[in-house]
Image (cartoon, rainbow, N blue to C red; front, side, top):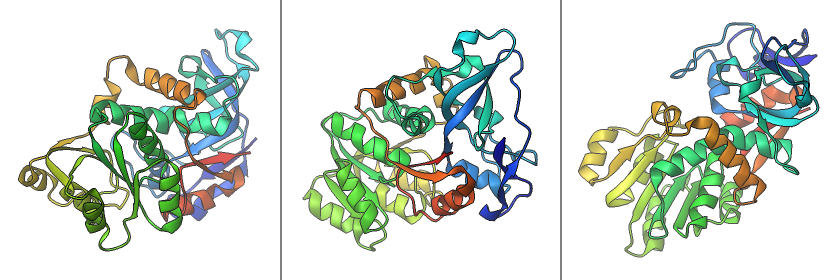
Length: 326
């Protein structure tokens, strides 16, 4: 089969489209003919040789990619052969291997694809969608809230904008550049602003006309994250789940205490140990997409162009979830 291989840590160009042995499913495993594979910022870090939290640097050579959708192609011993030919989606976890024509996964990790749901949508929801639902569980957004979402044109941000609007909240979406701002507006945000403009926070204050932001769903960090925190009124909630800028919000604990706001992180142990587990979140995310309640935006690249996908994602030139397709 053909797969994207990383033989040496470093720049995106180190991702090579190569011929490798087709994997065989072992006991309790299935092989998926991959129709779509998700690309994540975590993959960019791992490619560069940077581990993150529970995700250590992979052993080389490696095939990255933790989210796949496709069709069961073969099954191992102990797996019901009726699965062959079924459309499925799965999160591969630390096993990875999604950037390939075929991927192996434990049969217990499989989720059946709802009828009519495209593979690229499903692969967006099995990882990014379940994370969005975990964030929303913690945020507890209601129709009384004014919600600010930096990075609102990204894979997570697009879903969070849609979800906050569905419950009736006022939604302020921030993104970088005119095209992304327009995409945020199209996702349903009441106000869309360009956070690369120096006075973006002042514009938000002006548009809100004396009202304060009550919830921030923050994943950018750095100065943008700090500006977002300062838009919160006293008693507001900062839900933080990353820093795509490369740095955390400066002096977060002190700044939050001074502002009189609470800070919560919905990911890590909290997400992994939630009642019902994370597989239930993925099932709920797929169901929401099938019902057209949440619809992820995607930017697709052909599998051989994985290096270009990494470059575009790292330089913030993508919108929505980045997906590789055959």
